[in-house]
Length: 349
Image (cartoon, rainbow, N blue to C red; front, side, top):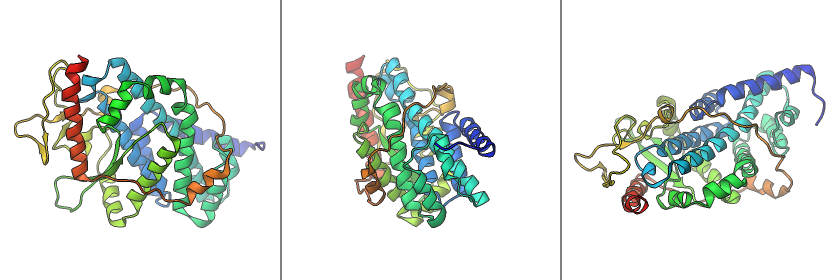
């Protein structure tokens, strides 16, 4: 790493300060991604990160919502939240600093990519950003950031003993997959007069697999940006609806942040049908993040540069075509989830 002059050292410190300020919780991270994309729409990854971070927030509040407290122990809930929060925090810590440096380079017209190493960014990304300054290849940059961020959490979270023992080896993680609770969805309004939002997305399978997570990220990017008309509708929804991490943000006809949930000991009775709730049934409890999870203190991001093998360059050239889901598939997955809760809750009580 080359020595750094005072002016550049001050810029790195300011980027770190701004990154830390915005990295307070899932809500502040998600807002920061969207605000950046609004100013720099050529950085497609920022909108993808915003929407995936929204999903991360929904997963966090699910842990205190209608279903999971019925089938998970409190300690498992705490562990799983920390896993989600740590991944969300680490990705923002690494990626948002890069976005802020790019913003500075765009403003000044100067190539400051040598400062990436002083921000702890992998050597994999320096030539990518340098090329992007000249060519504005949004697809290549997005794929590179997807690869990098999944590599970044691989050694810092996924491959840690905590994740292996407390998350992936526990019944709770497999229950998440069984109940289809590991989905990423993008809401949008098909027509301006529609009251109900549509969703598109995909189910995340085999999360512990690095190559699978990269493929999922690339596929989500394609789903988001391959259809310009739908992209505009998804973006308009994201811009219009503030992120609270309650699922009522996108489907208030089905979820509510304020309806009191039945006691955990009460047997759950399925209440979803094809078009929404069965008549007379209360909405599903989906709290706002601020109501159920306090801000967390994080240890520093440890680890070393992951980039050792040029095989990862091939990921920048390849698409990843995987199954996606629509409204009908999503509502079926919700029905599967609540039937799973109804069946498993008595067995676990």
